[in-house]
Length: 412
Image: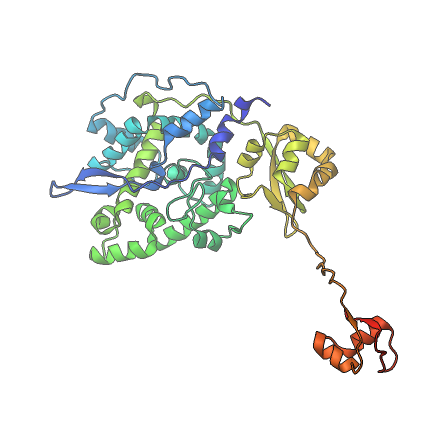
């Protein structure tokens, strides 16, 4: 398989981790004073390093992805009109803060948007299906844009993981398995359905999608506190100044993400051209199996396997505890079934090192002897060497208690 076929999968499996210091943008508040808003972490990862990594591995051909030389100047009235044209039930208003985030995507993060437009094509069927199944607004499909930049391996400073940036406790509360070998927060399908259930529960609390988005970012506790401090107001923009710094920018970033993913052409941004991965299917695994065994026997690139199965943290499918779904390219499913026994047996000792039973090896002790002197007794000899009388008798075939001076007997 050519490397170009897994260019998008490389994007999915690239495990860059957000570890930067918090970045901010400056906006004017109601008093016309400068205010710093902390950017959501999904906007902080290094796009340039990812882009260069793709080029070095020949996953993409470096080209000019822009249809024009630079971002065009857009008036406030045009922004207002475009936002209102987005088919959405979630409110998409406009103000200077939202414009700051639109400019961020359209100018500083243009390459990121180009990458995400291509990844967007891969993920949209998954995201839309889960949202539709739970009766949620489809515009929520752009929430992972600000959460993880559509990278299922993304990890935040606080330990949130995956497309939807689930914290450990929240992920487990919504049925996502997390242990040393498995992290279903990284599974695009399972994590998306879990996120849909979580968003639905938050809406049952607030009945306002902007408050739901804010609560998804900072937790219901902080939202409830902000509502109390704002005198009971239940509008995001009314409690805005009582929210944590990052949450203040979260809803504006979400609106800006919807805008840029809808109107990217108007800003001279085009999707990064790349070949999409071929169709896939799943096989149920009920034995311990290492992805490297599959890779080597079926001749599948290990990075493609990891990208298709990001929930397996150590390349190990622990099928002995339950059944797991393994995702493979369509053209490799038949080969896997044909060579299944060979795959499980291939370097099994090397790849599956966990032993089910072990024997404790007792080291052999050096033999020790004693030459019987006149007056020696079995009891005295036993006390001297800290062994039992019965041991001396057994080793030397002594029946009674008499021993002969001058004879050498074995002690151990």
